[in-house]
Image (tube, rainbow, N blue to C red; front, side, top):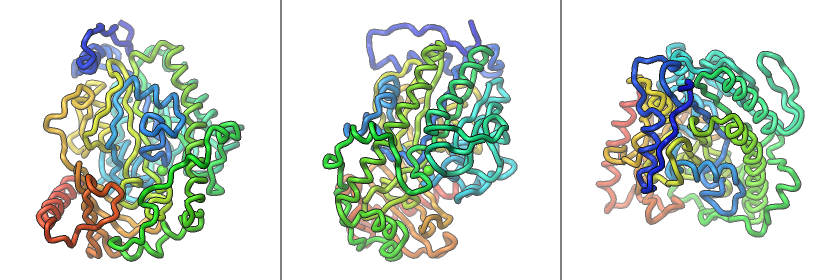
Length: 475
Ligand SMILES: [Ca+2]
């Protein structure tokens, strides 16, 4: 059998069994100890989008036009309750790469660097014989570029900027990438795939898109023909738009999230609708570029042996609570889209609580490699097989370094509750404010129940869970 190519999976009549059957057929779990060349192991494409919130794709929100993301969801598992450990670019990316929280891996804040001892899933897969490629945005100071994180084929740029004619480093050479950045990145990704297919070795491609992050002018300059697909009058206005912020940490009333939200026109429903339209249109432009990547996988005969993970690096407030931006522990900020498509998976939705920290252990598990004990995330393979028994019942959120106007934050979220601690800056030492939300009865997080006597037991339980989860991610 060709390395990197799995045997054809058997067709089973009962759809519910397809997931586990397909996973088994692609070699799950492959024989441990054999090199990647000696056994059939899957390929990986990990698409990390920038600031794509949980509902900014068609399969989760019919208002949004994303046929390619929807097609991935139809061929895989959509995780409807996926969160990031920290809702801002650098920490989220570092967490994906290492499977570890920022307080442990060295990147709790923007533009920071991984500790020297940290290992990325790319380094581990490369050591196991994978070809590795990185295309797109890089946002860590150490390593200074993706080649230091285990990637061989590297085309990248640092941080944010214009959506067109972007300055990039293309395989070591600085240049200006003419046109729409995502078309260029998709082209680079396809070049990597073509070379990887020719080499007949398993591969990992990490595509880190720039869209739909705002551009350098704080706008989403989508194509006019894409904007024409969206009727501004039909754009949503969040139910929790008019929040007087009573019950929330007082600093937020005059904080950057509200101040910039007001600047963007969120004092008026029309301002929110205008931004939703431009943001969704940018996502549609991104989706079109991803179509070129998916078409290349099909053309090269790689689709049946390749798992594709598609995730947003953090959410984004679009007028909820009058806010813009991210970092805070409310749903629109910490919740992201998360799709896993691949061999044997077919159109299911999973409601279990998952994290960006789960990506690294999942890819290693799918490759048949051991998961390092110091990874905080868990392999999603049981959930991909439809086995939720014993899965986690809560997730820890941390934004311990003040960023973009936030104070230090810790939070724990269960399927029903969220408990948030806000600390006096700059360190998470002195507790300044507590919040408790019943997400089942108050999905917009408008009524802080932290002081409610009838929920005291819930609050105490969540407080204990938070402390225990923090202990587990300290090193
Ligand atoms: Ca981001």
